[in-house]
Length: 452
Image 1 (cartoon, rainbow, N blue to C red):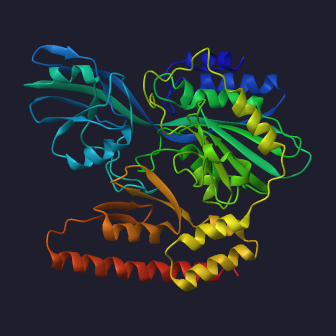
Image 2 (image 1 turned 90 degrees about the vertical axis):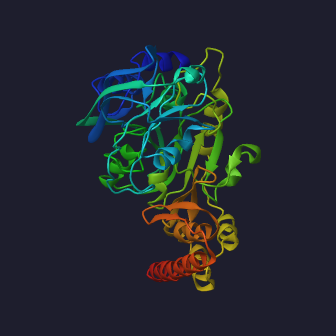
Image 3 (image 1 turned 60 degrees about the vertical axis):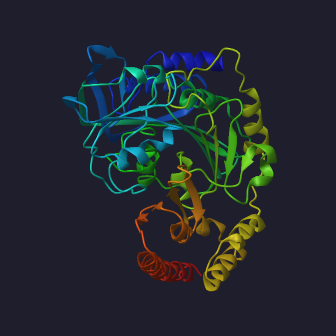
């Protein structure tokens, strides 16, 4: 039954936020909800739709199969000024896209077609950024040898403001306390693990205790009007227009496989198996936007899934997700959620913080203002590790990393690139970072004092 629902949704093909097929998928999800007698709401939202109308890559008379990286602009050129990049993983794409701005880039990873949104402006910024000015393409690894000589790159793509649709169903509970469970229906290629299996799981979840809000978001993969937080803008704008009161927890199901991990806000680890949980919230799911409002989160995801954002993202008929459904239902939804404040305190103690800031944070936890402290989570991107990390007092953590690393982006704060080639430059750069640390620490201290 679960796999049947996945296949019903994937038959519509790739769904980009705001395209004509999105409402067909949402209407099918509505059917799933109504079959379970759930009260259902649909929320329209403005999104940036990107569509490829025509694409052609040809080198020395040989046409090659290729896809354009999302947000690539149109182009029609014959050139030798291109560069082929063999990736270690997809998260490297924007690193290289920024390094080789003077060339047209062709990416490859393996023999599966893949997609990943291009970012052209400052990374980890919610503000609108400049759109990509040069397209990037992806080919299968077996075709690399055919990229040679003069190549013609032709792409006709279109950007337009459109409407995406988020759908929510409410399952009443015995109390006014709520748990939100989120998935998303926009996806690249077939997108069966990312994220149609999650959408299909929503109606399998039950609670005797909590009022459940089961949501499938639009614009998780794209649609964010060139923000370099190019993901999860469906939930970002949903939360701008909603009051999330009495919410105990948010569970995001995002790219779920049979071996998915649990990314957990500190304070909740006792509900999750030690071998399968990571004591850190995820920046890559819709739960992150709830975390920024002070709500504890868990994201169930597989960041090591080998077919991520690829044409091979297909759920096999022999795959079984019953253990995940059973675990969520029994261990979380029908359990009394109680935060272990000592776990968050230990997290704060391990941070390298000014003593006054650390004392205020610990005092805030002691006063049972755990949720207020969660609002101080944010993200950093270290180009040495590529993956975005989430930390309490992220600006301080990011600036401390900037002392040692060559490139660090800090959410809604800036990018720190080390171009120093002599000791004088390094010393001055360290003074600059130290100065910023003092300013940011003072700001955090002031904000925390206002919470008492």
